[in-house]
Length: 247
Image 1 (cartoon, helix red, strand yellow):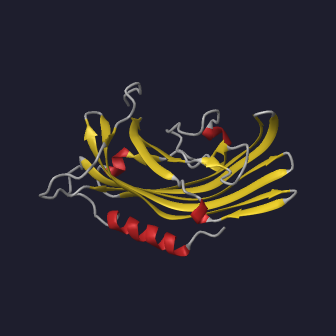
Image 2 (cartoon, one colour; image 1 turned 135 degrees about the horizontal axis):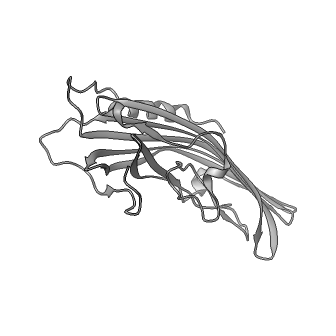
Image 3 (cartoon, helix red, strand yellow; image 1 turned 90 degrees about the vertical axis):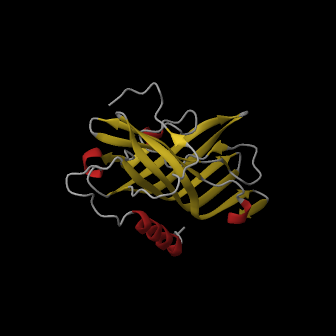
């Protein structure tokens, strides 16, 4: 499935809204930053059991925007907005006596991007982000499994029983920003990886074959925040877990 070109253009345009700010004044270091995370993903999933097979594919672009500020030795995230800029999906179900085709409109559940916290470790900021999935196949099937979607190395939101990092086949899902770089100006980093999972799983009274794979491209833009006269927007905060050690 080819990702919609207009979605890519929209994502690039959105990035331009946050990235152009220049460097801070000489000698000054920022204490607050606008932060934008864009996740572009293409993937496939499937299930085979008892003569029935399900083959699905999907593509999406999601954007998260927030404010980051120093909080003693740590960093605090304030959520501003999240949007699913592009979403398309399809599924084919085949059995000895029928074929069922599903389109995007048949997928009532959709991916949900979350940026959970930023953890400072050894002068670097590790971004904990995850995209929540849903149960597949979407067609009439007695068996299903939770669709695993992109997840950074700092996050552990992958479906129960799956160690997401163990199935990163290419690239790295370690989403890290240099603290020294953002203290003086805008920083834009790109990350990409391929994730592949294939296994025989016990479902009810039979063993079924499931596969789940995707390619993810993540862009993180961090820009020194310019204060305005109005109240600071934000509908929630994201802190690292209390049990996490301080950097």
